[in-house]
Length: 553
Image (cartoon, rainbow, N blue to C red; front, side, top):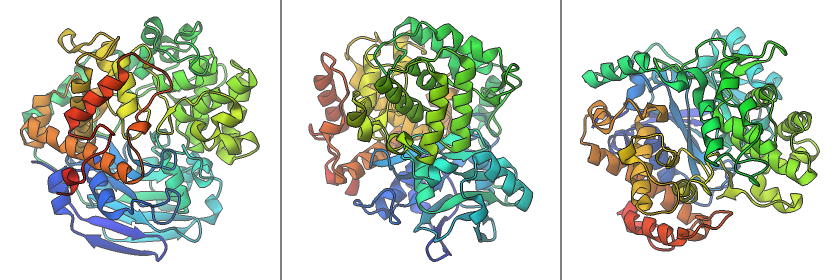
């Protein structure tokens, strides 16, 4: 089995010391990325750690394919205890950071403790530098990357950093890289902020490489030549379709379609596209640098989830306003999904849907924890009663789009996902719109056959996150091709994904998570039976817990 190579670098921020240890056994068993981050966290993180305390550890990892020139591999993973959900959580980001990380020669970097002053950490192939950066307190993401460029000669693709939201411990703050790419869900930016780290950079002269089969060339060629709507519109192209089938959350989840969808959909984004954007080595180029000529606003995207959160869910039918919300989140370092949903909850409480100026004002208040922003920065789960709105979260995480009331398999996926109401953990929506071949499609209503498919999807996605391969590769990277890339039987690889899901679940069980947490803010006929069937297929107890011997034996 092909896996990541290199030692684990532990950076102790309290003592300003570093240590290298071998981790070949973990790499061999868990490949890289999310798998390695999860196993290291399971072994090294106290089950009772405070997500915002010094005992939390942040793991940054790559996989074996980040040393290749294959499309869909320009990503890396981050793992830690989530300040938003309280559970173990991994998030991955695209862009260009992963190749520079790989050039340092490390398979994983672990941040422990906390700095006693704002710091930047510079990881090189021959040293680690601790730099006090008091002048960067409160700096926006673009200001941090410009500082690194001016003082260290490194472009944004070498930088992972936080904006004011991370410093201020907003529970859904992001870690940003390449300025517009994000380790978005779950608040890992607040973990970095709690450690008083404003930025971490990676640079090295090592040129690790991996020999891959012909499948890699085929994947790269098809990525370059494919005629795909995502190359023109990104994921925003889903907006009109989701609206038509009644799966587009609107006005804080009170409706399932938006009369203004045509003003914020993929066509609206495409008309403002000013070039092609991509991730490292990827020929698919589905990222969208955009510019609004009337206002001069430049950003990247927005993608469909952001269109939902700051558009339909906020009752805002102006693509310029959504673009500005997207840009503000990138600059402050905020997850657009959670932030947009939180702002939408606030608009609901104030009966101010559609007020774009209030949206933008509230985003800034959240980032700086000013006024009502201080409470909203805690997330919907902690503030919904105060606002007098329903608690639209699962495991404390705000919902992504692809509404489960219309797509019932996705509802089950939202409930079972170890990291909360995230659409990419199980990705059942792809089978229910459907975005897959007819033989793999499901009727969106009901749960027949879906628990079995969900188990396989979650395992497959955990495998992709360990390799690391982009989710948008689904039309190009088949199971056979993925097996060839990783030099192993596909079913054996799927078992690795299963172990990752088991470890996440068992860790969260130790923190008190069980069946009660696998719940939804709405009722669906047959849901409880489908949940029990899902547990049975995973070999878990009907209470949603993993038998200890399953992961510790």
